[in-house]
Length: 501
Ligand code: NAI
Ligand code: MG
Image 1 (cartoon, helix red, strand yellow):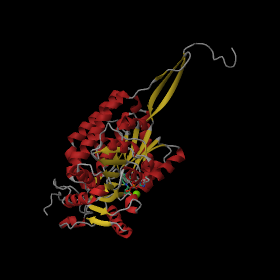
Image 2: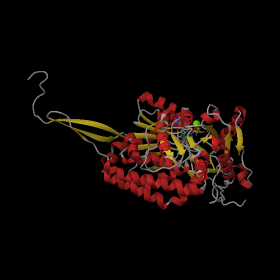
Image 3: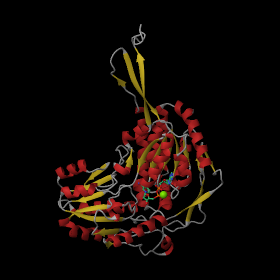
Image 4: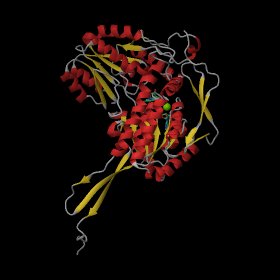
């Protein structure tokens, strides 16, 4: 295999971005971020800890009380728009860095992640001037109105599966609403967040409005989530850590929003267009190496089309090009880390123990050269899965789907909802009544009918049940980043009579 991976000699170096400056960690510590395609060190990054979190929160507070709150909504919007343009100008370079740090195919970072990042900053730039209060028709000689104000200093902790896009989902609405931010990227993928810091500085945001502090979860993340100086914490990641965050936040009654794991049902009825459904099943589970919170990882197939569907699905899955993520033709790169790869492998063993069949894939592919040390895994299909098995209930977060059969709508709906998660669901059918009935009855925050993994900055995204609370994107995201103040004004000019005239 010929490599298109740029030869790298020395790792790229990154610092923390605090109060408008690029600085080393107080401890002087750094950590290494490997390129998942080769295992080689891609970047060496300053490692934030509690002391840096304190500094960043103080800077964000100063900015919130100072310049940022005095800036007009229009100027805030213009800064966000300027940032979206700068990102667009640097999109090629950022997509390459994202692929080198995360492993996702360059085709994805170029055509999905980066355009999504630009779209989110652009969309929320427009909201800055449209955040309004209300007048309330209260009785008597009274005037009552509301002010919709920013929450304050926001701590934002994001995962590694869409590093820059998750930063955009979090930062754009927070800034549009007038908050300041301390953002902690995932330790696996810190690079593009710090690159974004450079563009934030270039766009002209006042210092301290955005602070970016790469570091580990148990140290920097925990210090941020439990910090008494923050007003809100927003988290995307595992349900397990979501609970840790919620508990830490409870200590200070810090506001919390959580976007957590999923085990989405992607449902194929016999009356579906099977070509569409096969492609939809692939998009549902193999996109981004299956490292997607809303991945269609429980593939429910109506029993009477199971054999035909599985044959077609396997044929296409086996043809997916897995390998060098910098190659434009690659459709699946490596998993993000050795830890994630090992987790996926452990589930293959679990599937076999539980009596499921490894119908396709199930191992790492044979690759050549430097890629032998990468964290690659084949597209994998488990069949003969029962919805109660661990492989049907636990988030694997890899290119691994569990095929479960069902006999009718009621049987399907019961099984689809038998999960602690409720992030998303998909359905493939030509029967519109059935599709909308399912959309209404399934307990999930997002439903796709005859499509999968569709997103837009204007459309809300978030979970039911243990997939979290709060909605990102769309006008709903602004609710997470604003609070309402009710103001009462007497219009009568008379004293309150209650205690006598
Ligand atoms: P994680 O939930 O531990 O990490 C996500 C973010 O939280 C990272 O920035 C991490 O540094 C931070 N974090 C970790 N522990 C923390 C703590 N105690 N306090 C504050 N912040 C903390 O996810 P991890 O370990 O990377 O992956 C484990 C599993 O989580 C995956 O296999 C997958 O199932 C799930 N996951 C789900 C994601 C989603 O989008 N819903 C994204 C990433 C992982
Ligand atoms: Mg973790």
